[in-house]
Every structure is written in C-alpha cells, then in structure tokens.
Length: 358
Image (cartoon, rainbow, N blue to C red):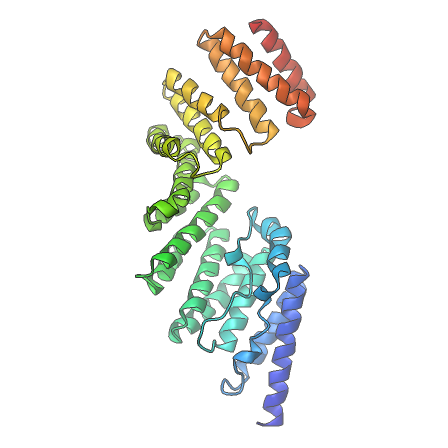
C-alpha cells in the first residue's frame, strides 16, 4: 500500500468523520463543506484501497443524529418532520458500498436538511446511478427516495413520482419495500399539504394509495392516506369526490375505532362535514360534525373550541337549541380551562352569540 494511498485514505476518513460530526451538531453548512471534500477525495481514491471501513462509523448508530435533524434542519427546512427513514447515514447493504456513492448520498441528504434542494439533485442523481450499476439495492433505494424529496422541494412533482416509481421497481416483488415507498410518498404528500399545495399532494397520495397493501395490519396507513386525500379534495373544491372518499373512511374507522388516533378521525370528519354542507347535505353535515366532536381526544384546545362552537352554530340553524346550548357550554368550558384556545375578542363574540341562544 503506497504512502500516497494511505494518506488519501486517512484524509477521506477524517473528512467523513468531520462531516458526520457537523451534521450531528446541526451545523449543516460545515457538514456540507466536509462532505464536498470527502467527495473530491473519493473520486481520487483507488477503490481497491478504499474499503467499506472508510464508510464505517455510520451516524445512524448515534440516535442524536436523527433527533438533531428532527429538531433542526428537517422541520425548519421543509415544514414537515424527518422520519427515521430520512436521517442521513442509514445502514449500508451487506455488500461493500461504493465509497464515492456513499459520500454523494450523504452530501445530498445534508443539502436537503439545510434546505438546499436544488443543490441536492446532482449528487443524489449520481449516487443513484452508482448504486444502480453496483446492484446495491438498499443504497440505490435510499438515494432515489432522497432524490424524490429533492424533486418535490423543487416543485418537480412529475419527476418525484417517476423517481419513486424507479425506487419501487428496484424491488418490485418485495411487499415491505412497496409499503415503505407508500410511506415515503405519504410523508411527501403531508409536506406539500402543509404548504397548501393540495393538487400536488393529491398526486402523491394517489400513488401512495396504489402502493399501499390493504392488509389488516396495514389498515392504519391506508386510512391515513384516505383521510389526507379527502382533505385535499375538499380544499380543491372537489366536494362530491371528497364526500365519497371520506364516507368510506368514516365507515371504516367506525368499524375499526382503534385503527387510528381519534384526532385523525376527528379532523377527517370535520372536512367531511364541510364538504357535505357545501353540497347541501345539511343533516348529514351536522351528524359528521357530531362524530368529530366525539373524537376530540388528542386534539388541541383550539380545535376543540372551534368544533364545539361551530357545531353549536349548525344546531341553532337546525332549530335544535337544547343541543346547541350544550355544545356552546362545552366550547366555553374549553376556553375557560385554557385561555389561549382563542383570542379574547373571539371569546366575547362567542359569549354574545351563546347568550342569544340561551
């Protein structure tokens, strides 16, 4: 082993170690600089010399790395949350990975964490090509999944869907792999929905629904996708389709009450009620909002106040003043327990409205 190769090997190891330490501390720009140096060094390192131990010390072994991403770069950069599958430095496949490919995919993930999606595209594309050629499925899928996220952040939804389909095709007969890809698509859809991009989010949810296997042990995931699709449809004004989607969700969650957190069911039923009311289904909308009010465990006080007060309004319109009074009383109790459930002016307006009913 030549001295030059040994020196390059040592420099690459130090660059990777420094980059991962920077990422663990949430210092993404320093981490990116170190990863770029690692990439440059990897391009000049003899692959017979740069063995897999250069890639060792995987940062996924340190739980603080994932927590740092969730607490800092992930939500701050994307408006969503980084799941375990998005933490940089996931485990390597059983085969010896390409050192250059590993550096590139970690560089791309660091760019994503720092909010530089466009800059992430090039290293992730190259990494995906490297791992496709070397038939390293785990790392190939990882690079494609991150690349799809970069495409979404750049507004290239069609490219994101195509990239995810490539990830699915990498292991087409693996049911668990398909489910993981459905989860990734759902996360991307949530990311877009949180930014108000409902049409794009709907495309991702639709593809996630096609991938999701409707097995009983995966029921919760399928129901979450249905609820999210329904919400997007309502926001897009596609109320008839939204009602159809959310009524299926309503029946399924009514039969499987433990399948989802009650807060998810409550939110979906609020959107169902909104769509029904827009379509003139007044009686049905009141019943859906009643069901939403019965599933408020886990919801914020703001949500509880809004549901009870709105239900009171609708019950007044329906002429059921006794039930309206009860609903308004519940709303008042929420506010009085937690003053920040609404502004003072909102509460004063609410009290005047309630007095008219009483």
